[in-house]
Length: 160
Image 1 (tube, one colour):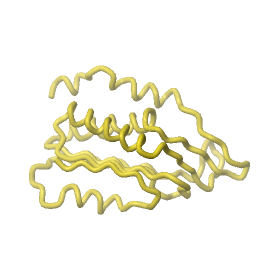
Image 2 (cartoon, rainbow, N blue to C red):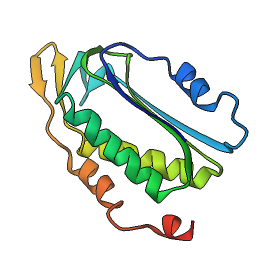
Image 3 (tube, rainbow, N blue to C red):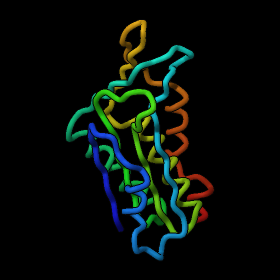
Image 4 (tube, one colour):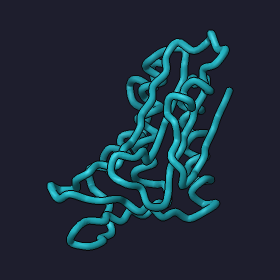
């Protein structure tokens, strides 16, 4: 099974990463991709960029740990997670999650699981840059609630 976890400051090409995961594969029946993009506004206020800081080494290990958990929960055939750090301008990519499986249910669930955990457990800190200055973004209760649903196997997982 192909697994890729990468943190980088440079932009990534989502189509090229997806092609690399599926090239020459006939066992994959479902591919789910999620690309997070820096919005040009936050709470109605225009923003110029986000700055993402991370704990090097720890961030990669934490993401890899959640990828391993996804692989244990669902019959995955491939996973790619790329997360950027540094200054990211509005319209640029932030994160890519690609999950491949024989069937769509596993691919969708694993992609949601990984994104929920990236939002709540990966050691990243986000600062928003706007006309009014730079502010650190607080954790959101809605993100924690989304991640909490994965603490017990769902009906979808139990059926697989």
